[in-house]
Length: 300
Image (cartoon, rainbow, N blue to C red; front, side, top):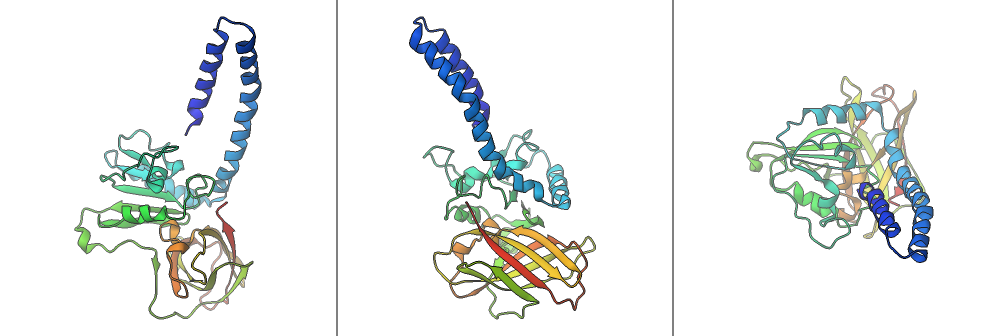
């Protein structure tokens, strides 16, 4: 968000130096700035672009769902969103960047950022590297602010296809609308479907999974059953490949807890049901013996 200010600042600074009456040192400084600033800008761009590139790997139907949801938001409704949604929504008066709410302060500042009380819609890309990344605005306790944002205001889950999740505030009585959590702790351990192959070592283990009946558009809810074995288990991204007898059924990057109910908030030694929504690439028969291959990708 500072990029639009860097180039005008550099140009004005160099012009100010060149206008200085003395000759040698200011002009030498201007030459140094001209020599250093362009390659430095290129270097910064090259470090930012790789964070954005994984977004291009999303399925077209996820991008299409996001487009439809954004277009359907009424102009008078207030929105908080991760970075990619800010540009198409920039014409509205009440638009908030979610990373400020997530951090709880302004960028490069210690000034608190109060969560807006008038929010109507929340749009989150859980795979947004510019928000949920240790070199960006991530911190282990930031999820608490997102949980607080969804408490007691009649929020409901309005759209979901990983990594996209949207919440909308309903006009109904908040006391009669259940808290829109995607993570639960089942009283009884369910029977799992298929088998799990987890690569590497991790303090969070995938114990099983289940699939709901698919919709006509080949989307379905998949529930991942995790067990945290250590209290200091960090947040991560799960790269999941679901396979059946007909080949790969789904390949997707999932954020356990959808960045709002992450592993650091789970109890140790309990099975946690983590619900997601995915698109199936091929049909999966009801009696298909499935295999979930999962690898853990840290947030750095």
